[in-house]
Image (cartoon, rainbow, N blue to C red):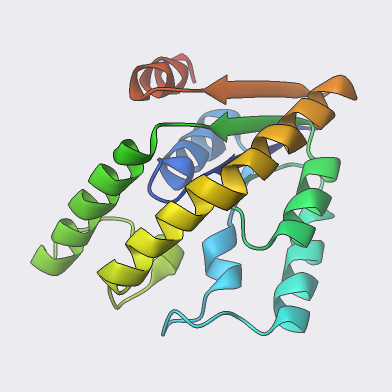
Length: 170
């Protein structure tokens, strides 16, 4: 039984890593963005999102990427057997988000977030990255510290080089 929660800021590579771990380790992949966001980038109604989320984390083995909201993220962390925190400098997220937006605009994006058809508004995307770095990442770091103190395996990747090395190791 393996339940891996991948956490971090937007455009850090969470979904790409989750898809890779899903394939290499034979785990069910759950993309939180697909549960949390509607096709028009509005939030899924809370009661629906929470129900879908809770159904997924009851499964025996999975890899979940994303944050969603903090209450469900805490539940997910409690159910996980392993946490992976992608904790990069903010400029990495801005850079990768800009690359993704350009690929989306050019029609060359392979795996759009949330399976969306429409590109998210760039200004709101960058605001979300800023807010997550300022307000959310301290919460994620504390959550990982607490889970590690409880005996969970927590992997912290702090650079793209560390992410690449981890990815290659499978």
